[in-house]
Image 1 (spheres, rainbow, N blue to C red):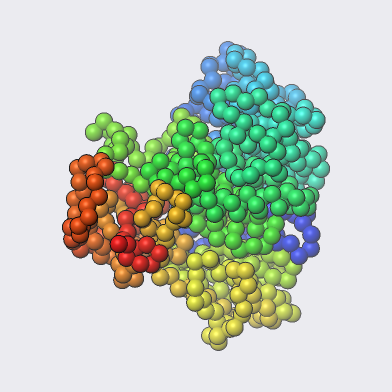
Image 2 (image 1 turned 30 degrees about the horizontal axis):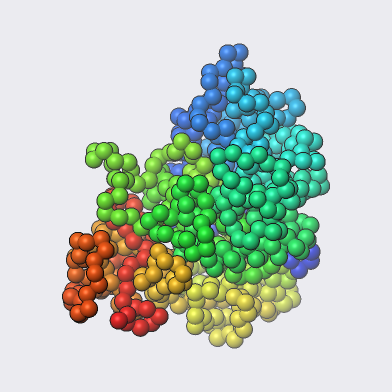
Length: 637
């Protein structure tokens, strides 16, 4: 990738001097993220295109060209967005030279050009003359502005990455219609268009798009939306955003709203907006985010629960919410330069997001629990009458194409820049090209904490190379050309500022011992349990890897964690450890607690695998949180 590819999709381009800015000249060249992107190109994208055709998403557009169109296919009015998200991912693939999906891209873009209404309106559900509702009749549930948002993001990606402005012309006409219609009032039931309108402003310079995005953020919670089925809290519409006490309601809506508001701040400098978002973020991380980075604990309304309401087996943590949290995190990083947002970004990326896709790349989780019990109804195949752990597609297929587009643009989140410095935000094997500095990064991260960065081109004078130190990392060392460097760490960053020469090499070492994490005492669901992590990876144990005892009976103590060792398995690092197996429990649901000594445990061996890999080997029990006799570092009595 070279500088011809303008800039990443999520980027502030009008921020003040010294602010953090995204980079576009980045290419991931190896390692786990590269493997994921190759799988995306070779498996997930072809599968997604096949499913979009089979489900009728393409036909929903083409039928509008017929005199007697067939009925709209699908239950929901927002299925065009699945095409738009896929097109956004394809814009990255085509921009990088992969032309395998060019025919599909051109076909869908051509259809959109032809079916768009004369006034710019575009929605295959509401443009149907037999539709039960008229355009703009149901802003709470119609998702028309949500559709527009994903169309804009695909259009901006195509224009930036491919130099193809066809979609941009389509999206701009629709956006102009929305700006005319909603300039004074109205708000969509599903936030998303806010991010897109800011991006369209960045691409075109038309301030009316930014103004509309800011208005949509501020109108929520002012009584402009009709609430049905779910209460106002579901839509984050019970109070204005600046008065919201905590993240709440539908998890995807919440994350998208916050990300859009962060974009508005990046362009307007509205400090009260940033302070609101920082307060909401800190509260979310402290009380409402799963250890995997997943957001959303309630199935009934795909919503965020109360503080510390984080049940493992009922965790919803929708894959789209994981992407939304990463979008919010990245924008908060751009707004502040704070490494804490990238720590969460990384945790979500390798856990709550990655688990949504199967190892072969053609089956998906919609919700992502942290525990499966032995008698859970989901099965590995239809031969036993159950459903697969992951599915090829969904009635509401928002997650699969969202995975496609996010996977395609991972390089946008490897590094950023500010005046006089490059900031390394995500460690992976990559080439980084900036106006001042060219770097080649080599690492086996996240499996290994050894990172080597070679300088290939440098400016004449001093320049900064700023390295992120993950919050989990301790005893970090850094050398330049083999010599120890005493760069002070500040706020999660190591800053190397010097005059560089081609051939210079920086080596960062991030030790990766196995860690045990407990949970807050108010988090009842995981009291008396621990989870294991190494580097950014959260681990789980599947029954496949605990042949000597049920996973529900494993007892992992401090000494077990200290003595755990790592092994390579199928290109991943797994944890192998000895643990105690508790004796069989009483058959009573609520037995009287004995006053005598408990029965002795037996020692067994279990293997913990990365959480994102669970569910690829069939339907057996799984746990992220396992029982422990260890409480605050001491043996429980």
